[in-house]
Image (tube, rainbow, N blue to C red):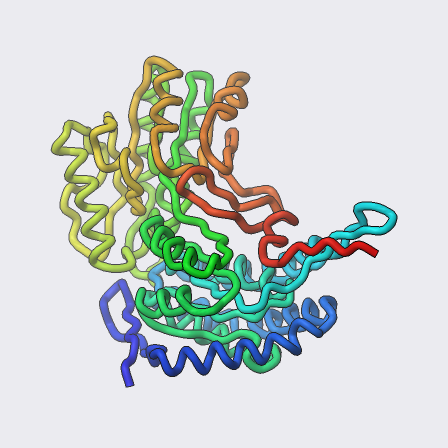
Length: 445
């Protein structure tokens, strides 16, 4: 039997293994899902919601062990891991309630109503950087809608996903939630099969492959595909607040976050002060293993990602960027807090998503030019503007699915998590997002 080995990114030690799902295994899983969907769809929605909440309540009792496993497998410090576990439990309950409300029948006339029916089998493919949070955002509305779920977690974090599914299945009916394991080949097997919807969070490259496969059966898609998020700092911004946000957003989860700030454009009149404040704040961050006191930047998930970040840093320096903090060739598995200035459009740090703890700053003299550079990306997930009275007007010109003024994006309850351009296809969160996991039906009486 082929197995998938999970490693600690901090020291490359073996944490455990799970069996890889082969073609025969998968056909059994799919058959079981189809059979389970009959009873799950027939169950009243209130009962489904109650079971989902009970199942995640059981997860809460394992929080300490799950947080430690998450830290060891993904690398983030224990405080952040505990926050993700607790957040997943709480978020599951909130999403379940909101999805229940969103999926209620709606009258459109005296003799017609709109109904939201289950689609059938939902394939959920989640990333490694937030292996619980992202999975919950996709699987819970799918389950509330009456779909059964086949869950394929990232091959980088199979153990935490497997443990959580085992706990949830102590409450959920048999085969309503099943997990499969493996690399991209297993993901392709899932997408190519006769399922009804794919919900995916991950890279743009993988998203394009999924769209090609889904086209064969016109399988429905909900996909969030990463970003290259810009931040604009205007001359009347609160520079201390802007600098704190810039560093926190760039360094969160070791920069391995889809809405991390990747590109910063600051008015040249305040740029020097802003850069000094950014460096002073960045120096306060410490790098190390998840169980080292006061560490807030953990290891990079694997050597490939570490090499990519390093290449972005060295490319910027070779092309004229100033290295204000950090190293041009840091040794793995860590990337120390890094601050680059004088970024230009020719540099990889502006063209691509770095996905590491790097603050990349560029000065501008003309606001229109800064907006143009902010929009000059195939991505459009999030964007942020820090400034005074003109900040909202500038924010309205940015091409992103989520835009914020003097704060981070996505901070408003059950708001949609949505990307523009090549950062998304469909979206989740909010009533409209929850309804994407259901078939809309018009009933005329």
